[in-house]
Image (cartoon, rainbow, N blue to C red; front, top):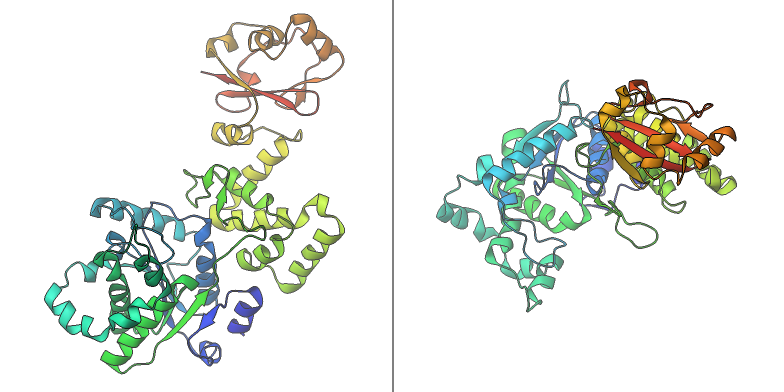
Length: 422
């Protein structure tokens, strides 16, 4: 049942044992997935394995989230054309704390199959070098390691090559699997398809040292239909941390998904059932201009990642661009929603000075003259915070703001200007 669902949704890239699907339906398993603490936030490129963990946990299995505080000091060479910049232990620890806070939105850290988070620095950083090389290193064939795609490409690159530091990464990750097997009876590792070689290495080490059978499952790496990289917007990475990428911009990222990508994204990043996804796929074909599927996708992912309140604000901010209610939106959300419209800064004292709105707008460059402003008001084409202005004698006041510092002016249907009162 679980494996069939994962397969239908497109999560299954490779499995080490054909019988894994049946085994997962027969009892509760402890499994793990690793995350590299290269930043204090994960981004949407990490969402596929995260949703994979959610499916497994909802089916009754116990997730271990391994954050590579030890391996992160080295860096995984998989998929990299050159060696990463090494981070300090303090940076890695701060990153781990940030990642834990985000994953709490997705995984349940309480209950009978509660997720746990572990840091491999706790067992890797204290390993004696000679003991590790003697007891672990002897089980790894350099010939086999050189045949790994991620290693072979780098070794053949004369400009960058590969340091011994990165070359040792596979040994350390394999030791992680052994440690988690010993400590938690963890028998399954999951991860992106670029982790296949590391997963198999860990299984082989556990078999050799413990005579135990372990398993591996990889998820596909998400790509976009047009060939561009998934997980980035024009502004860069789309982060899971709301301080790095606001819920509004996060919501917009999904709203802007292409018609070609949206059916796959609905399977990957929502828990909607097959019938509902099928209806949304038909909506893409029948009325693509309504973007019903993209809106539902954006709602579902934003709700899970940021919660109901953040979703509601993101939806309202999106509607504000088309004349919706602005009341209750905060400065940051308004700044995001109107980031590409002209703006000007005004002294807050103007709000208590009884100044005419039309005078302020002339000084801010919204109108070339008072006459132009009055004519637009008379024709019903000027709006303040999406409410029509009926009188040229309208004065500015604290009630002119729609958030703590911002008032939104609109000329006609879609010519906006932001006033910031500081």
